[in-house]
Length: 274
Image 1 (cartoon, one colour):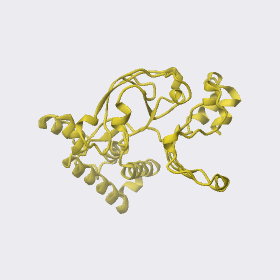
Image 2: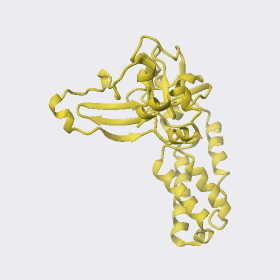
Image 3: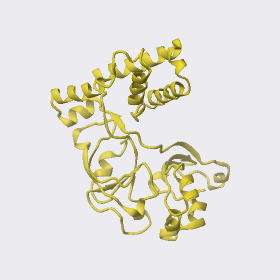
Image 4: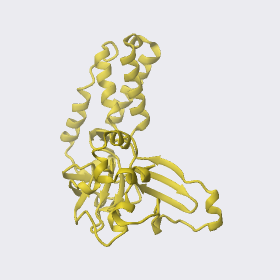
C-alpha cells in the first residue's frame, strides 16, 4: 500500500495531492513486526525512489534472530504486533526520571499542583469541570488504557449530557480522577512530552551518507533542545540532550524519533522504550 502511493505520484507530487495526503495522514509510519526469524521495527521509507532499492521490505542484519528454512518463508505471514500512533501531548514522570533530573522538591510539588489545580472539587456535579478533568487525562500518552477510557467518556458526555448523572458514568469518572491524583502522589506527574518509537537515520542503511549530523535528531519537524529518557531508566547517563532539527527529507515520517548514526544517543536509548 505504501509502495503503491510512492510509485503512484512520487514524494514531491504527493504533498500536492489532497486526497492522497488525507489517506497518508492515517497511515502509521512505524510497525513492530514478527516474520520467520525476524523481530524488529519497520519504518515507511521510499528506498526505491531515493536509493533505487526495489525490494518492498528491507530487513537489517540485526533484525534476524535466527534463520529458518527458506522453503518455509512462503507459509509464514508478516505479523504486525503494534504500530506508531499520533503522539500525545504529555507523558508521566516516574521516580527514575525524577532522580535523573535532580529536581528540587518544591519544583516537583509545583508541577503536581499545576495539574491538581485543573481538577476542581465539584467535577462530579459540574459537567464542564468533569470534561476538563477527562481532557487532562486523555492527553497523557503512556497510560493507554486510562487515556482511551477518558476519551470515550468525554465522547459519551458530548453525545448526551444526560449521561453525566448516570451512576456508572459517575463511578467511572471518579475512579479515573482518583487514580490520576493518587499516581501524582507516587511521582507520576504529567509533563510535556511523548513516548515514541526510535529509529536510526534510514539513509545510512542504503548509502554511506546521512541526513542527520552529530547531535541532531528528527521528530515531526520540531526544533529545539529536547531531553531523551529511556524506560526503564537504569542510570542517569542514559539520559541525553537532543538537538531537534527540521528536515524536509523526512516530512512523511510521522511520530517516529529519528536519531543520527554518529554519536551515542541511539545506544543509550536502545533496549527500552523512549
